[in-house]
Length: 123
Image (tube, rainbow, N blue to C red; front, side, top):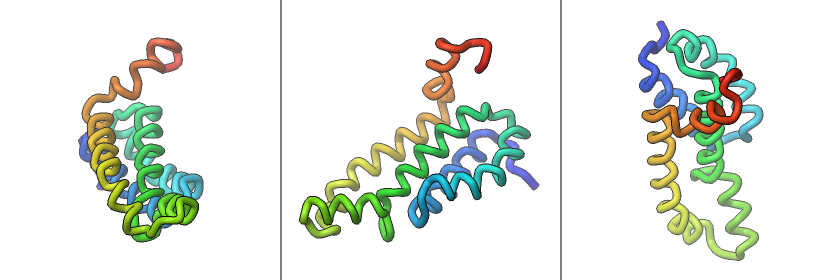
């Protein structure tokens, strides 16, 4: 049974992408999860570009999220600071990024506005 509500489906897929982005790189995660979610996305009437942008942003946010958060580990080593200090500084960014993802889900024109303006016959 698929989730037919577009907002719930995007929230669920975004959460799964965030979780997968925590433990693996974005490309393999998208290669694994994209084909799983795409039929449900089409059935729910979500534009594929909207789904793709929300997915990529969620995966990118997962890349800095502990416990693994490869970008956070690398940046704390380069800066020469403990990961706990780097984590404290990134938590404010994390909260704002979650709000941005929610806004992109609730208001698809945030994502689709510019593509529709620049290439109206393709979007």
